[in-house]
Image (cartoon, rainbow, N blue to C red; front, side, top):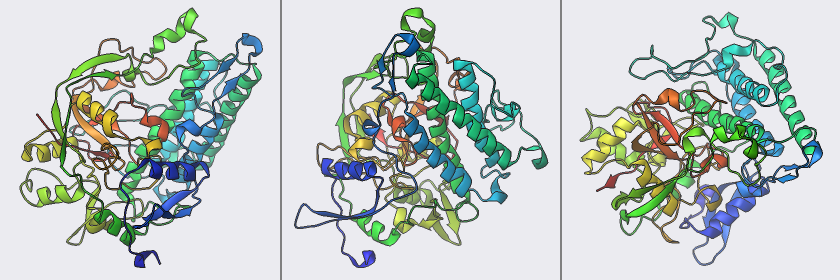
Length: 510
């Protein structure tokens, strides 16, 4: 039926965002929507999938009773509730236990990361380690999971060079079994649930250190859902299983809609000059100062590289409304850039045909030509230069996203609304606001130290291990980024020649 409906697609609108949020709160996900050309009605075909991330504003705040602390704290910022943890666990268990076949557990989908089983053990190990730091007490049995404490990010150019990390078994037989890891995971989750019960009953005083631990451990797991998926997509169709509990997209009907997505009246927009506020004030060092120890209400917690708040000047520049697409990059790869750029790791050759990888297996370029292309910083820089431009600095991209990106609650393609990118919608109605299609975006800014950055002691080396001149700041969020990590102060980073991450590029011009 869907294939025979003559579909038209709406420009981005706040009404569309309201529909998406209402569906999410009711645990539904639209598979495809059809706008009536003669009325304001929209027909949406929906499903109740295995997991749905509701808008951040719909998550209920944790409320701490006064208890032994003599304080009552109503938490209205970003400290996660236990329900938020349970939603994330549903996503994590879906990916790790239902999309990775048994025979893949001890395989490496990509050569620059660990075997799949490492990450299944790493997540509860990290949580248990930080809970012990925050509230004390013995580690969860078995206490010998040090092999899972810290992952790897070796240099692409020289994989023998890698930051400090835990040592892992060299032979498959020495890895703990999946059943052992699951028992450990359940124990750690029970320990976390007990902490929430103790906070709510007043038996445990909620300090900034504990609050930060809850934020950091949940967001760490959220980051790893995405990083594990960009590994697994390399084996989609040849090992990795499609996400169960989600309908296979009606590619042909969707492609027809995407082909008819309106283009902006002009391909570029001029932005600035402007004073831009970056970051927020959230120094982990303040957690130990007595007068700040219990000040958690209304405080936004983040990662060390997000702090402190600072104001920078951004000169006027011109930017493409939309990131570089698969179709545009394929023209470049086949033509002017034939010997300058590589086949993106988000594509694959099937016979003589270029296909685009998805979690459901490769799809024809015809279906994905309008999606943002996912490629390395180096290759997208080559494209931008050939077009007479460059990739934006971090302040430039931050200003553009602040001005025109709508975020998850505004209808953006993040938080598993889809398991694939979609065409960008910026530059249309409602002041040009829209989505970039569900991708992170590269900047030309190298991650490095800045005034006021206090390295975290909870997660030593999180940022400062990578002050090597090789890692570029990326901003935004992909379709598999959990909604809370769409926070505007979040700064992710990847090596400039790392080809696997879900990062796109946008051309800007002086």
